[in-house]
Every structure is written in C-alpha cells, then in structure tokens.
Length: 474
Image 1 (cartoon, rainbow, N blue to C red):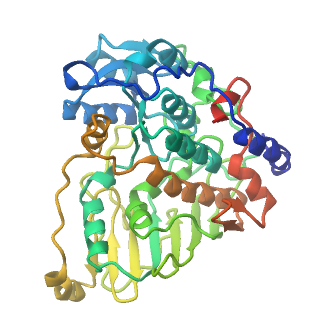
Image 2: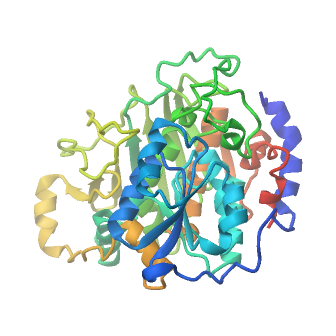
C-alpha cells in the first residue's frame, strides 16, 4: 500500500522521470507520420479492449462503414464478453499484449481505439502517438495529472497524429447548441455551475473501515493479469478490481467524477474557456478512506476571470445522500435517450439525473449529460427568450465518424487531446482532493500545487512499475 509518507518520497523521483527525454521501447520512427489509409479508402483500425464499453465502441465504429478492423487486443480473449467482437472479425489478428501488436503491426495500423480501464489508457495512447498512429481514447484520458500532461506534449510533438477522446456529447446536439448560444451571447457572464451525478455506484456498500486491499481471488485462466496491471504497481488479482470494478479504487479509476464529469462539464469547460482551477476544495465527504472513493462528495473548483468573462465556481456533487439544491422552476428530471448502457445494463433514471445547472448574471440554464441540450429555466423566461435563440446547426458526423473522417483528412476532431487534456486534468485535481479529503491552491501557469505537499505528490503519483519507465519519456 502507498501511504501519504511514501507518496512524498516518490514524488521527486516521479517528477524527475516525467521530465526526462529518451526513446520509448520498440517505437518505430519510420512509421510515424507516414500512415496510409487502408484498403477501399477505409481506416485500418486496431481495437484495444473489446468487451463491455469496447464492444459498444466497436458497434459505433461499424455503423460508420469507414474502418477495416485489422487487429483485436484484449487481456482476456477467452472471456465470454470478448467473444462477440472476435466472431465479427475472424481475419483480424489477435493479441493479449498491445506491445506485441504494435511491434508486429505498427506499419499496418492507421488508428487505434482504446477502451480499457482508466489507468491503462496512458501507455497504449503514448505508444500509438509515438508510432504515428491516430488515437481514439475513451474518457477520462488518464488517471494522473502528469500522465495527461505527457499525452498533451506528445500530441503536440506529433501534429500529424489525429486524437479524439470518447466523450460523445462533443459530436451531438449538446455541443452545437452550447457553441451557438455562447457565440450569440445567450450564454454569457456565467458565475457558477452546479454539476451532479447522484446515482448508486459500485463501491456504495463497501466497508469504509477498510485497512487493506481485498484478498486475492482465483484468476480466470484466460486472463493475462500482468498486462492488465500495466504501469500500475502490482496488485493481486481480485474480482473487486476486474470487469468494471476497477472504477471504485484510487489506484485504478477516477470514481464518479472521472466517469461522468467528461459527459456533464465538457462543453461548459471548452466554450467558457475554464482551463485549470486556481483552487480545489473538498466541501463534504461521506465514507472517506484511503482505498476507494467516498460514498458522497462535494468538491469546489474555483476558476479565475478569463478575458472579459467573470470568475466561475464549479461545484460537483455525487452520492445518494448528497443532492444539490435546484432553483425554482427546475421542473422534472428526464433521462437523455443517448446515455449508453453500463456493462450491458440499461441506464435507470433517478430523482435527479446526471447533469448541470449553469448560473449566469441574467439567465439560468438546466442541462443533462452526454448529448442532452440545455433549457432556460423557469419556463416563463424560456418563452420570453425563445425568439432570441439562434439556429443550432445539425452535427455533420457522430463522434466515431468524426474521428475516422479526421484520420482521412476530411474533418477535424471535436475532442482532440488539446481540448480533452485540460478537462481531464480538472478531474485529476478533483480526485486528489477526494483522496486527501482536503484543499489546495493550484498555479495555473506552472501547473503546480503550491501549498499542499501531499497533494503535489499525487500529481504524478507513484513511479511506474519496473519495465514501463520508457513510456514516461518524451
């Protein structure tokens, strides 16, 4: 177990490692930037992670008709949840280890779609960028602030590589409406945002008096647990880590904030140019412990003035007992039709569905998650504003098509790493506040925590496991 004291010991080593430059193992500079779109004008695509969310992503890719799936990679090719995708692509080469896939096929792959646990995204995405392979990566991009920073720097160093984070709302009505309303001056002078996700989570019901990780369980025979663990310090296999349960634990996931924040705060973050906060503070925690996320959290993110836009306070609420106050005229909460399934289970509406309330000096906006559009509340004000609202353009492509067409040079991605990384770094900072159940000040220019050494150590976290160090070198 990593204690707060050990984090301080490793912080200096981690920061030094992250600043080093050098080659990454097995990267082939001859392929970088020389990708050729595959047969029939389609993108030769590798899928890393083909169960659960990966299966849903594959279905979205298949609908576009723009990709040749040439490689499948999953740490458990023998599991029931990977069989459906494998059966669809009998000619695609199969791998358990993405490193071997890139070693053998980098020159045959135009793009990769990454749909594996949060903590494992970084190494695959970094390797692909260095190979000159276009990257679609599920949200949130990485588990730590510095991993996100390294991905951003790698993407900037390889502008020929197309990148896209999988927050699908950036290609749906939510994106185009927010952009149009902001440009028309309907959304202006925003001073506060309430963001909320109050559904039951996997760790609700866990013992918050926990003092060690779960005892090891028998590992599935077909699972390569060593590769699953990736850059993270080794843990014994446990059913409480696998098949989506990784989201519960600080060592592997990003909790409710990382899971849903990119679907709730994405457009506000981009079009209000929020960037990074100058202060992050835990206002409430129920069930805080050193291993998994609190049962409930309230986190305050403070953003300064940006040009002529006023300072903004964003307050995040999660947990069953922690619903935020809503303004008069809020009305009923209706679930968006485009929220995806979770491990095959349909989304179930709750008393207050995931979403946000945006407070400006003149108007209040109510919004949901994913592709849900904003409405002005109360209804009387909405009717008064209706004639003043601009026309909102239709999306020319869904998120998968946008990515693939960008790989072909026909569009630009709407959630490239230059947009997605700062958003995800906000969530990285929020998770640090959750983990420490505390507060800290953040320097937006130097990207350093200035008043809390424990929090500063968590920007990088523990050094990578032996054998993975090169992935942290630019």
